Structures are given as C-alpha cells and as structure tokens.
Length: 433
Image (spheres, rainbow, N blue to C red):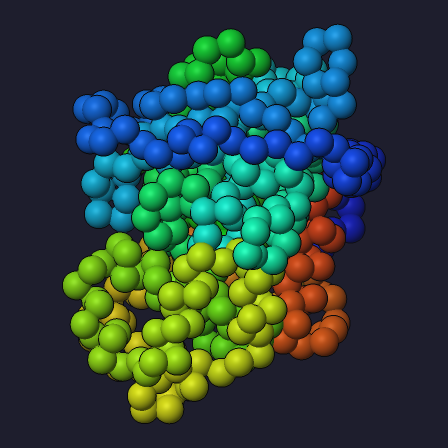
C-alpha cells in the first residue's frame, strides 16, 4: 500500500523557480541561434568505443543567457554528440546540450550534475532540444511554432548551482526516427549523456561527481527508466536520486487514455518508434491500418508536438484502422505488438537511489493509476520512493491542462527533493506495508 505525500511541511525553492520563470521570459528578446547544419550528421561508420564517449562538441548559444564578465548567466552551453545504444544495444550517435552553471554550488561535496530528459517534443528533427535551446521558439519553414517549455525546470536547477545535460534522445536531430517512449533507448540516452559530460574537459563538474535524473511526462518515463537501469548499464555513475513526474510507465494504459484527446497524435509517435526499434513489426501493423492511418504516421514523423496537436487533436484512432477499432485495441490482440509494448513497462527493476514520483489525480494524458502503480512496484522491490498526488480538479478534460499544470505546480517540491539528495539529507519514502 502506498500513502500519498502532501506538499505541506516540505521545504521548497519557490524563489529559485520564480527566478527561473523570469529568465525564461528574458529569452523572448534573446537572439536566435542555429547549429552548424552538419553537426547532427554522425560519422559513418561510428568509430569503435564505449557508451558515453564524446564524438564531437561545439559551443552552443542559448536564448536564455545574459552575457557577463565570466561568460553568460545562468550558464554557458556546449552542444555534444556522444556514443550511446539503441533499444537493441546497437551503437548509435545521440546529441544533446551541456549547461555549465555560473551560480556557485554551495551544497555538500562536488558540484552535482542532472541528466534531464525532456517531455514530448515531437518526432521531427527541428524539435531537438539542442536546437530549441538556442531559439526558445522554433519557426522552421513549413512547420508550426514549437516552444522549449523545459527552460523553466532547466533554469530552476542552474540557479541552484546544479550542472545540467539535456539529451536529444535517439533520432531527434540525428538521422533515423526518434524512438519515442522506448524504455531502453531513452534510458541509454539519459545515462550516456551523463557519462559524456563527465568526460568533457573544462567544466565545473568532476569526472566521478554526483548525478541525478530528472524528467516529466515522456521525460518522466525516461528518467524512471534510467533510474532502474543505471546499476546494470552505467554502474560507475554515482546516482543520488531521480525525479520522475507523470511517468508513462505503462504504455498501453497511456495510449488508451490519450486516444481522442488533444495529444492523440502522440500515438503516431509511439507506433513510429516501435517500427523503428523493431522492424519485424512492420507487416503486422501495416495489415491493420488504412490509408488514413498510414498518412497520419508519415505526417507526425516530421512534426513537433504543437503542430501534431493542431493537425490531429481530438481525432479517434478508430478512424485509422481497417477494423474501425481503436489502435490500442488492435495492437493488444496482436501477440508481437503486445509483447513489444509490454517490453516498455517500467517498474520491473529496482532503482538504486531514492525516487520522487509525482502525478496528478486527474491527469488527462498520462494516467494517474499507472504512475501510482509504478511507485508501488518500486516500493515492493525495496526501493526508496516518495509519491506525491496533485489534487488539481478536472479542467477541460482532454485538452491537457491537467497534465501540464502539475509539471509547474510540482517544480518546487521536485527541486527540493533533488537538492536534498545531493546534500546527503536522509529520506525514508512514503511506502507502507
């Protein structure tokens, strides 16, 4: 049994969050920046090496940055390409951004690093966080605007003196399809980003310093997957804790909930991801979808989430199948598809460090029940878990308000949780027998 932990009585960092919001607004007048067009093209073939090895780096401009005598506040940035592994453990190149904070670290021990996994950005290369961080809002020709909404969380961490690396995941910016909500691929990208930055010279962190994981929504799932895979995939990392907000730990439950909502197009991302990671699924899926479904999959593969929501919001996936049934129902009765979706389930391994899981009780995108089940699963395996419910009442169900608002409302608690882990403060969790 799991008891909900209320926010009352917990130490928060509302001042830092407010400052982060102000810095984000400053970006509205900041200069746009674009990456060298060839930075995202990996060498072929990839040279032999280890996961986390740096392939190339370059200075990166930030839209949210105030120049000063020692660089820029709140951070200076470096764009990185590093070696990682896909869902089948084949070597791949992944890009990302390291943000070196100007704020001193005044906590215990060496300056910590957070490997931050972003929420749903889309599947088009223009949606890569390493591109959006230099623009704030992407205005790619032929595509709708896409804001970098993760800046609030990033700046909240930087203003505490915490270094941050933001992965682009597999296939965002780099060639290939982004493997959206693929448990192994995303965990590898998050873990190898931390490894890569610890090998980057001239930073404010140390090669073997403390590490944490952070993410909300898609990012919450990626951070959660990284937390439970860290001990086997990257045992050398000194992991202190993880924040996983609204994690889609049960992909089947999440796909069922978003059908017909403003984010129904994300089901297309997930199917494209499955087809990228597991090509043997192609014929099975193609036999079940109609021409309209094929067109949807092709279109969302090149879109950011704002454009996808505008183009496909509130549609029903039953319109995309030959049988007229929802895609989730069709996939559930196909043994191969069902097995591969089940392979994405998070909660069957044990995090080695404490985890904070947050979820809105009326989240209309990522179901509350499966997030709570993730926390209970980890509790049952002996992990230290804090689970916090956000009681926000239902607001325009299906629009996504009850998914987006808890991300902001939970930021003070998440920041405090991560700070406490880096400062070695004791934590007991709120699991109960």
